[in-house]
Image 1 (cartoon, protein in one colour):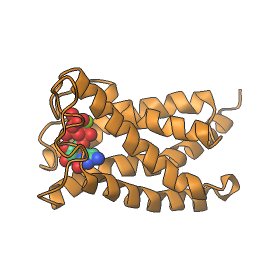
Image 2: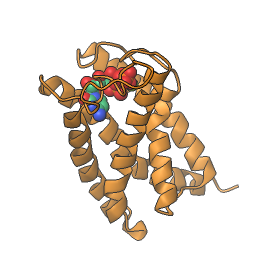
Image 3: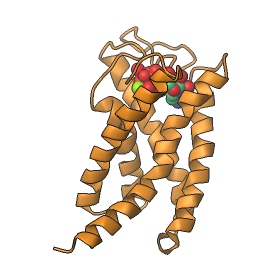
Length: 174
Ligand code: CTP
Ligand code: MG
């Protein structure tokens, strides 16, 4: 078994997912900077009378995450030129943000209010969004890297959200 191959594959996968992690974290900062941001669901409620997505998903957060994520996507393209990630630099952040939105949609259907925790989905909704994008773009990493990446994202997400809570950027630590 050649460990350095696994390490190289994982490093490349990490670079591939970096724009997604940035895209997922940017809205937290945007949400603090812009006071009167606009909810993506415009306040609409679903058939179950619960909000469609809730006030935690805003247009400002979405587009902020898309722009900053795409900048990091271009960085990934230049770090891994052999994979030509120009299109992916835009689609990976988009997948991350849509995955996060779909996560909130599911949470509202379960009757959870904005910010209430749903372990695993809270940390991995954007990962699943990115995975779908990578499948569609035919750029799926190897299975070992994908599993390591899910574990990394889970713990990074928990650590960064705890830090954001301590810094006063978030009102809950998850
Ligand atoms: N955010 C945003 N727009 C988005 C995503 C996130 O403005 N598209 C901001 C919101 O201020 C949100 C914060 O980033 O509160 C943290 O995002 P997240 O943890 O995903 O949202 P929650 O507040 O936990 O809401 P939910 O229960 O729907 O996950
Ligand atoms: Mg959340």
